[in-house]
Each structure stands twice: as C-alpha cells, then as structure tokens.
Image 1: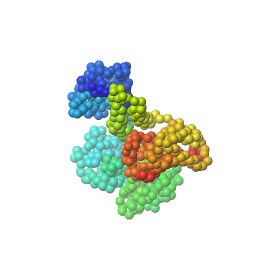
Image 2: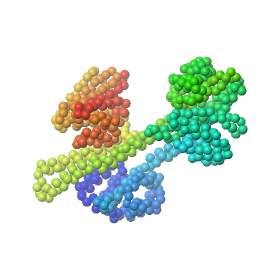
Image 3: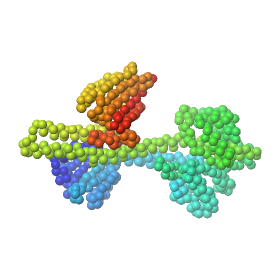
Image 4: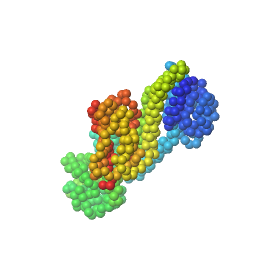
Length: 630
C-alpha cells in the first residue's frame, strides 16, 4: 500500500480534494490507492472517489479508452510511460468530445524501490482554444501586411528571410522559396549581380551594430527595365535582455522623387496624386522647416485642412513634438546622410481616438535649382501596436500563471511538510497514549489543538490559492459602495484584534472631517485584516501597532505602523510576488500570498499602497483611496 496510515490518508485526502487538479494514485500492481473528486468530475465518473479504491487501473483504462480521440494510442502511451518510469510533464491528451487535457506522471520511489504511480490531469481546453486564436491572429496580421502598399520583410539574426509580403514579391512560389534564404542566394537563383546583396548586408549590419533604424536609398531596375529607387529601412528589434530577436525591413518606391530634377513639374503633379491615394500621411518640408505639401491622408486622419499648414513651420502639423523631425533634417543638412531617428507618435485623430504613427523621412531634390525638400511619412501602426500590447498581456498572464503553478508545487512539497508532520506526530502520540489507556484531558486538548491549528493553516493556504485563482480567472466581482470608513475599521478591529492573541491592542486614530468613502466591503476587509495581522505578527513582544485614518479633500489615507522586525531592502522588489516572503521571517508562519491578494484588491479600487521599512525598526504601510466626489 502507498498510503497505509488512515489518519495520514484522511489528511492527504482533504488536501488533494481541495487542489484544482485531477489526481489518481495507484500502487505498483496498478491497484487504485487514491483518487480525488476533481478526477471523477473531469472524467465524468458517476461514483464517489472512495468507491473506486482497489480498482484495477489497467482494466479501468481499457474500459475508458473510448473517451479519447485515439483509444489505441492512449493505451499504448500509458504502457510506454509506465515502462520508462520517468517523470512526464504537460503531455497533451485529446478526448473524443473535443476537450484537451494536460497530463503529468510521477513515479513513486521510496528508498530506490518503485512503489506506485501518480497521474495528474488538467483541463487544457480553454488554453488550447487560446493558442488557436493566437494562430488565427498571426494569419490575420500576415494578411494585413500582405496588402500594405510597401515592401515589408522580416529577417532573422543571420539576415535570412522569415517573412516577406506580397507587395515585395508577387510570385507565391518565389516568396515561399525565399524563406530561410538570403539575398546572395536570391541573386544566385535569379542570375543577378550580388552588388545589391552587399549593400543590403552592410545596411543590415549597421542597423544591428548601432541598435537603431538604418535607412538607405537603393537603385535598381524594375520589371519594365526602367531605373527605380527604393527608400529602404532596417529596424532591429531586441528582447528585454538585449539579444537581437529579428530585423524588420521596410521599403517604399521613391523613384518619382529622384526624377524631380528632370521632371520637376510633372513630378509634382504625379507625386501629389499618388500621395493622395496613399493611406500613409505624407508631409513635404523645405530647407527652412516650412510645410510645402501635405497629402489627402493628412486631412482624412486629423480632420484638419491641408491649407491650414501649407506655408507654415512644421510646428503647425498635428503632432506635439516635432523636434525629432527638426533634428533629422538638421543632421542631413550637415552630413548629407539620410538617417533618421526611430519614432512612434501618439496622436488623436479627427474623432478624438488615440492613434499611433510611425515616422520616417527622405530628402529629395526639388526643381532645377537643386533645392532640397524632405518628405515625411507618418504610417498608421495602431492595429499592430494594440495587437502587440494584447499579445503581451496574454504572455504576462501566462507567465504569472506559471509562477503560481511553480509556487504551488513548492508550497505543497515544502510548506505543507511541516504541518503534516505535526499532525502525524500528534495523532501518533494520542494513539499511543490511548492504547496505553494513559491519555489525560490536558494531553488530549494539547495534541488536538496542535492538529486543529495545523489544519486551519493548510485550509487558510488553500483559501488564498483559490482566491488568487479566482482573481486571475477574471471571476472576482468589484462592488464598491459609499461606506462609513471609521465604523468599518472599528468593526474590523473589535471583531479581530481587540485584543490580539498576545494581549496587545492596536491604537486607532482618526484625523480630519470624515465623509463617506466608496469601496468594496469584501475586498477592503481582506486588505485591512491582512495588513493589521501582519503588523501584529511581525512585531511580537514590541509596542502595539498604530492605525491612523486621515481625511483629505481628494483622498483618504490609512497608515498602519508597527515596531517589529521590518523588511530588508533586498526584499522590497518581491513584496507583491506570489509565494515570496522576506528573508528575515524564519519561524513566523505565512504563505507568501497575502500581499499579492492585497495588491490585486488595491488595484481594483485604483488606489495606491506604499511601504516604508527598515530592518529591526518596524514597517509603515500607507494605503490611499481617492475621494471620487472631488
């Protein structure tokens, strides 16, 4: 038997039935030793867990194989895992009803002897649906990029294509062939001179080495055999750790701009007509920083007639900060090098909506006199910007969930070991005393109190885990209403801390003219109880904590101060992280989840919380709630 102690089994049964995973334990002969309620619910088993104890799991697996999309493969894979006797993590299992599960397997090995198996299942259906959704978004944005009237390509670290849009390469087969190839291979395939590949490679390396956008003018021959000029730009994208992730190449045809010396008047007409057809905002600026042209897209986006900015300095255009444009033009005037600073502008369109525009510019010769003008391009990248932001939210949420899972495993394997040991030892002592008929009422009370306290501690941990899970899952409702803050705090104090278990009482002080404060009672109760409990818990044998409620015109501040062990400076960055505790709390019980939940609830209120502390000198916590009436 894997679990041969009835009391230990009872405690494990209580804990494992609380965790949000399906758990099954079998002995080496594959007889079922334990299964929790979540397992029965996940696999729709119409029996109570205790009715399944002793079942032959091999027979049960064969009988339930039809639930899976590939019954044969399901059974074969179980035998493979059991034969290997190695840890398996997050293996995807597909069910016939369309659900997807993640499966973990842990061999139970005691002193080198294999005693049994643990199977853990998680419902992965929603996460799998999210993955498909992300894939759909990827295809969606690829379709958008393919219809943008500009050459767009994405390169890996080796300057090999990983994406190129249809505007750049119309031939589908050639576009597919280009993936994981570079321009030298393209030149060889098409029998072209490699000089253009040399220029592009140099520009690519320059952008990567400087970590800035690099822009250059490329001359070539178009499909009709005529000269063409493309303004090309390489923009390197780096990860947070500084490592290059990929490089985006962007090119627009500026052939008409290069022909201005020969076809000045014709060019102006063509340029104006073409620019008016573009979705990109085009603004032309002369050497004196005055606007000489703006296309129809400018008026379409900003709702401002182009006549209002023609002839005026660039500060008149509908973006707040034109210093970047001035700087790039001034740099070109000094160096004759068309390099500009990467910039994304946040502006309001004619409907008052926030939009994001990427900026680029190119100089060109205007007329026979050889005057230099500068074409500024503002491209609407709002969709890409919001898509990246949304994907980042998904990534951040997934990372938080992974941290919570890792922390949960650590809590189960470490933090619960001590209470389980206390419970087991207390139960065994009581059992021995009872067998010897020597148990006394004080002894019974002592050991029962230990068991009850440890069980309550584990129950508190499980409640906090479930609360965090509820918040992360977006299932927590925020219900604020105007309340009397003074009475609310007095009620919490009298119910929970008057006095504290060590006999101390908190000193409650009120300042200013009170007024109703809007907050969620459930959340605020949790916030204040946690912070006051911490003030007592971490200041044992010290002066009583203080709580001061101050009313200001625009906010209500609640200061909770203790004179205890304080928080080391190195632990401040981890205050609101799951399962993180200060390095000086050894011997003081805690889960590392309390302040995480507090921070969630503070954010619900759009309030603020600040800590000030020094080790061995106490801690002050300042909670500030806005007065929404102001």
